[in-house]
Image (tube, rainbow, N blue to C red):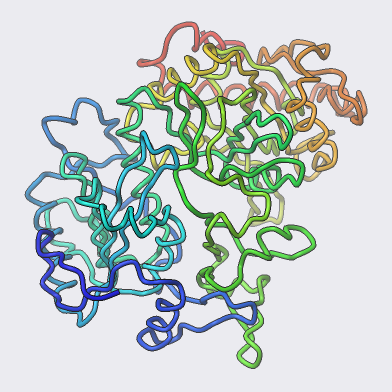
Length: 530
């Protein structure tokens, strides 16, 4: 398109390209960004420089009189004074004004038109423009003509560093959000994921004010009934794999909102991990990384531009960003009715949580706030031991309100729709990592399928003595002995000791949130939580 006037944002560069097509952005990137190229499948290969992942410790939120009592201040939301934000904003604008050409993306966040917001991205790299053009919802020509003023503006000056001597700066990287002005300033990082998560963070503040629950989760819908389900889970729990279900429509893979009427995807695309990607294991994602998609920080063969997804020389956090329309079973528009099932995925490497448990609304709040999974870390002696990981609401770095705010909203949505809630362990059985074995993916798929169908709602259960969970003891296609974790351990006393240890970690972690959590929710945790 022709140049676009951004004078109201302090941008004086004459040549601003607004909402270029993928083809035009390819051309701009190849011409103007050294190292950028095209894969043998047609995806744009780009590099984010020194930072190949998010910088959560450098996230700042402006402390303003209108919102400071709402924000959950601490390591997730570090306060920034308004003057420092203005200094960083000026620094970003000054840098952008030195560029000969800038790129502007005007698009929407949120498929439900009642709640969607207008997002404007101003950046100096075509790769960033293509990334956000994929991740946001592209307006039609008529919508673009009537676009007006945005609700949120992102100034991406990531190639230019923050001044470490500016008050409140701890490094050359700073990602600053002003809730009041609806502005984000990015300095010192060219990692594209910072932009997408800045939009999500902003909505994590504004949506709860409208009685809408913003969620870091995937969502699917039954192709026949249209009934939806949401899946929460941290990295490694199987959220992406289990949401890529050919029997269901994909609503979205990462960010959603739950209104009184249903769920909607916030994004217009997917940002999938590409490390160790194969067509055999994840055909939908593999085939989506074609012309129009962005491949970030991957290694490729210089001769034929074939991407080596197993090569982690640059980073293990290789990723691909593509429009959701590239997924064959995507539901467009990305909206559906209220979820009939809510699934919390955890990969318990301790091997003590049941494979599938039904949760009460109070237990749902407790486990939602906890956001538990366990990772396996190698020790110096070569012995692998599980490490518990807790991320509130399964998306701690992106929260603005206290986690109890989101948990309370979740509980109200569950009660009003009578949605069933399940905790599904995709981790170990028969012992902790190193002794037991990972629960078969086929078994997990059976459990998830029968959650969707409602078959597990009437299945027999037993009560776990350590966590108080009502775990399912019979599921078609799954051996009964797998469903009762203690029975899979040869050493029953070792199981009890390990379960007590994990329960203690839950209790210790929850102390952070106890002061703002209802007594009934505290009582829904492991034995001894009260």
